[in-house]
Image (tube, rainbow, N blue to C red; front, side):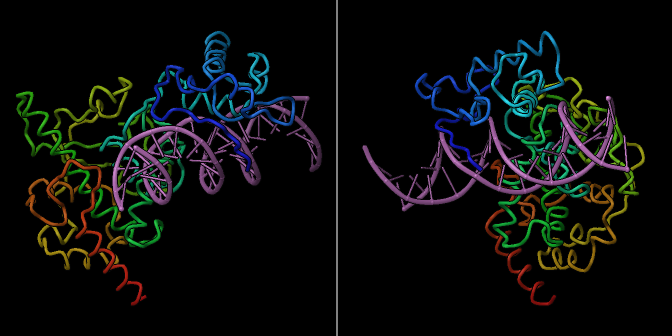
Length: 329
DNA sequence: AAGGCGGGCAACCGCCCCACT
DNA sequence: AAGTGGGGCGGTTGCCCGCCT
């Protein structure tokens, strides 16, 4: 692959067409002049962005190859499409992936694997590329830290039974903090169901490949389940559509909920629980218990504000467990 | 202060599917 | 039925930038 790019977009630049403004005219002449038909490659210039935006505003999307020609862009149709969908589209949401979004990504990836576009459909304003990058840079990083394969059962179980509950806990903590800061009364025992309808397109999550409960039960307050202002890009974001739950079961499949001991915690997870407890609802029902768990529980951490969901002890212990399990396998 | 290093992310590639002829 | 083009998707690349030494 030839990506002979002499300059790149400015990181975190807003979609305000300033992404490549720092590239000089001299550089522009040298950047990405393709062999065929003078097709350009590499970073987009402000002028190119404006051309694309204006053309789409007038004529709409689609027929990208002819669009590129008609708009006077020396780009492939694919390049135009990608630029529009991932960057210029007005409803594209930028910025950090929120905890709620992380939770959705982890859950949906556990169901569908690397179906990034499918996952992105359920995250308003997020692109498949962004989710893919998040997965590769953040999630795979943790797998690397644990010296295990990101697709291994161990890592998946760890995500499901450690990482995701911890996310739930942190979401609860953030919600509670926000609510108390705003003086809003919060009943933390009130749970909510995130079901298939919480997504933007109002399509059920179930596409037939799951055949199990569709309710993702989040034990977080009904209040303020939505995003922060800066990332609530659309009024249709799922956070605003979380509905109260009325049919929660009290089933708890998770031994650690009653035994915070780390050894029994993880070992319980190793005896095939993923086969018997794969229901998302059961998983999130576990989350119900987490709200009452001791914040000093080493496995759940103290809800630190950092992005890292693992502490050193977590990683060391899990590495140990992985090594043991691989020996026994 | 300077160089090295790795994470983050925009952009590209190749493959595949589907609609149309 | 076969050919073709458009579009979608997952994987990969490589530059920028911030952190670390």
